Image (cartoon, rainbow, N blue to C red; front, side):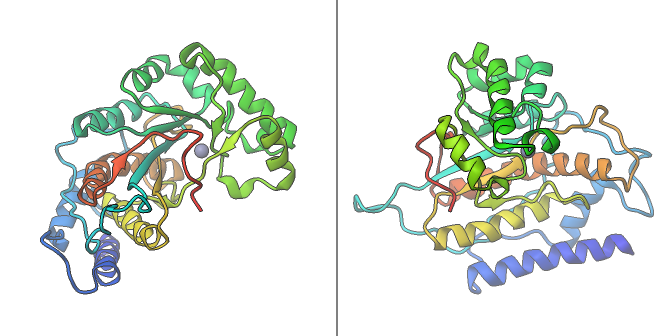
Length: 306
Ligand SMILES: [Zn+2]
């Protein structure tokens, strides 16, 4: 019964997205019916009454079961016909990796769809997954600095400790990138940086990049692919209204040593969220393609999120 409630909530979200963003015009696409959503979700996670397995596990690299989710937004804004109209650019970003269970699958989808993204990498994960970093760069994706430790107790001890941890990550990255990676994303987001941090970072030449769209795939209660997609649709409506370039926050990393966790634990939710991101990603890419966006890599010229 609990599962049905979850589904109802997911359907409600979908309905809300329709009402909010289409103004009654759903366009040519058809949304998933509740039973289609049910099927998509049960295939993967089972139900509390009938668990799919004793543990939550990463799945093999098979994205064919990805739920078919269609864009629900209203018509895309007109593409720039005059020089004053900014080109429509989207930045997909993946935080906390690289991760041996998930990052390769994200890269496979990006390659299949022919789009670029930016990986906000953590140094101690880079050390564990050198081949994934090489693959990111070989396939034309961007790298940004997400600190060496991603440990709040270390990076938020002081402004100096923060830049030291970014510098430490650069020591790990330079063999791959040849130059230090000065574009960074603060662990937990730029709102964690007070004035003293901002001044220190600016003085050291570091450039902060935030986000204005989130799939909310760090939700400790777990999110479904449909919820992630709807979260992105909801934020995109606001970003388009404010005429900002979408910078989308998702995650490919995990700090977990093991890929198995008991159902109901935060670790299981974390793994579920990574799986949900991978399942939602093809539809997320199609959403931005259908609205005329070019996929770009984050660099020092990326416009501020807000
Ligand atoms: Zn992070």
